[in-house]
Length: 368
Image 1 (cartoon, rainbow, N blue to C red):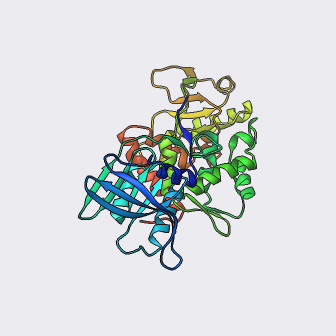
Image 2 (cartoon, rainbow, N blue to C red; image 1 turned 90 degrees about the horizontal axis):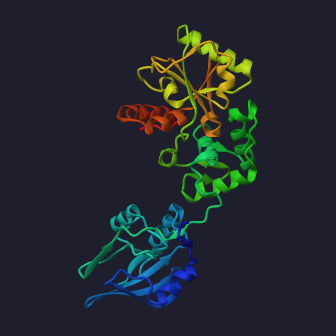
Image 3 (cartoon, rainbow, N blue to C red; image 1 turned 135 degrees about the horizontal axis):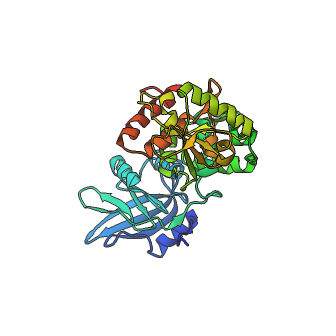
């Protein structure tokens, strides 16, 4: 069970300031104004006095209730867009600030404090107080636990194949059309509500943008998020075989027998790497199949762990079969799945993964 608390509202943050619960000991923050109007149309959530030893400095404060990249960027843009009163410094307060966000604030000359004990408060010529490392104590609302893992990851993955859509319905249709386990197996199509919920998080994370349609904003960041949250199939059953014939003959045989057994089949990402990068071909061809016994019954090869050339891996995890690429009748893993499997491998695999990433970005029109 996690001990994360509900994300506070902006009013909650102001109330915590009022009670003296927002601080970076020994630095103290004391609220002196709320909803303070500055010059012109400038309006601030609060004005605080920061005290450190015998030194003090006054700050205008912009609060945001969400610690998502979108919430953080919104706070920074808001405080940068308004003229500061004379002798007053800028500060943002969010429920949680990551180390990278604190470094960004420092580079911009903006102080920042969160409700977890992290912050950087700078009053030039007077004091600098910095503290990092406290864990996030607040959950960020998400109707899906992790949108970058398992089935929900297919929403993000589809943008790496088609970077823009006109509607949520169009995204849903594209996801279901690219899911091999829908057309050849017994899986349930992804619903419109699931797509909408995932899109909300992708938008908060500044990965997609809604503006006369829905388009991919940061493919690099999306790939990084998918990589950080990727989980391999957990100890799936495997059968290793020695089949007769050259590579082309084996590919034809597997395709024919999978069709005869009425089971879907796709090469793993590792076995598909040569489709998208320069890599020495593996001696063994590994494939995913939701019922390996049905496929095995159609094959005459000998089961062996000594120099096998085919490996059957039983799994029905849908992202493994998503956006497969067909060549000469054989299904290969998508470049995204290939990238994720390579990044989960050793140093040589990870070097190859960079080639696959470059292939992906070129296909999206992204150049160095």
